[in-house]
Length: 311
Image (cartoon, rainbow, N blue to C red):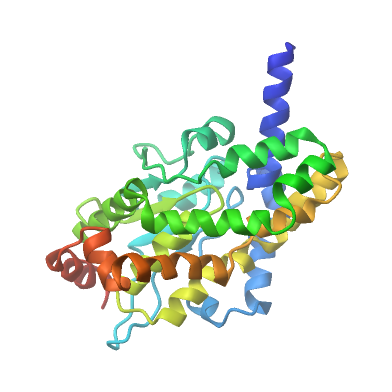
């Protein structure tokens, strides 16, 4: 095997450990069962309304529906799904996903993520639509830190609050970046239109880009802000056991002496979300301004979104 090939394999393994893309057998060991157990014992009260789609090759797949709105309605189930990467789905998973009747899958991952994690595995006739949302180079930074194998380098890159600051910066770009806003807006328009049928959108871990997309969708549907926040934070419950296994694997492999440096990158946190909403207020005066001026959604589209998604 050439040196270049060895390095590629090493990088792929390291990024797999960091981003939740281990082989299907590893998912089976710490995935859906651990997620369901954590859900029943977790600290997020809204998880009782969240329907997880149990898969072996992905751990953070959920139906967005089920939440109640300010107006006394309820978000319909079976129309919109959120997920982590679908590149490791098993044959049984594909049968489950096929049963969702999806008409469209939107992939928020950047090309580098696709390079190392692989494209989505989907039922026949279904192809993911690439709609990359920038991570400000986080994926490459993390792969570089892990593959360095150097504790000093890793501490310099991720320690001392730097990982948390990186995450807050990423969340701010969900609001400030025209390219990111365009990707989120296109997805909301497709949900409102509904002609493609049920839609699933995802990124790598299903928690940041996917989490923001879901937060915006739920609030646009008049779901209370606190409920939308709890739905966002629930990723910690679904991913906790699996992410802990990833950190243990990095330590055991010798690639990281202190894999807890990754925790701020693996978790969702209220202050990350607050960084985005604070920027939203500064740029657009609040959530409605973000929807109309930032995302360019007109009143007709917002009304269609309500009509289709809320019963």
